[in-house]
Image (cartoon, rainbow, N blue to C red; front, side, top):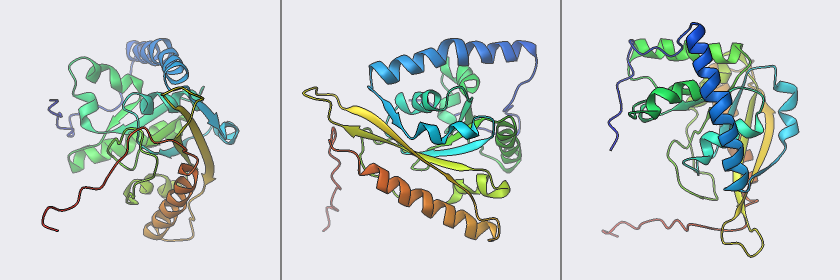
Length: 241
């Protein structure tokens, strides 16, 4: 079991310098990007619908919200449909706490959630920096992975505060699972929708809720494209009932 490290004010989100830049390029472009393409296409049999909607924004910072259904595929898939845009992910501290991968994951775009108020300032500065550098920041608002789940779980509007502060464009994507002939494993088809633009005439709280509702309703609609159920999730009844 991984013991998550504490992300406090001492955690450095963005390390600078020539050797750091070379290291990031090596792990992200030389190692991770080809692995992402191979895994997504050969293992998940993935294809994307609506990728053209992202093309006008490849030279602009954006946020993307998606459903969380693959342990390996979820970090890989956005790197495929966002290419060549660099992708970052807001992640749990577990992702930077592993013995080996924990040191590599920041180079692959991992931005761990902070544990203290002081660290939160650095966290926000990091996100703003990625957007200013025309990157794509991916958020999985459902938080927990439910493998192959075909519906959208309710999620709060807290994470929508990031794009609402400066009116950054938002996209959503839904990985659906569809039959693949007589094969046992399904095909993953990713549907992309957007952009959604925060209503800057509303208060921050109001625009955050409005944006969340628009994205959630769209994701629920896109999820209906799934036509096969690999794992059936059944609500556990309370024993006292």
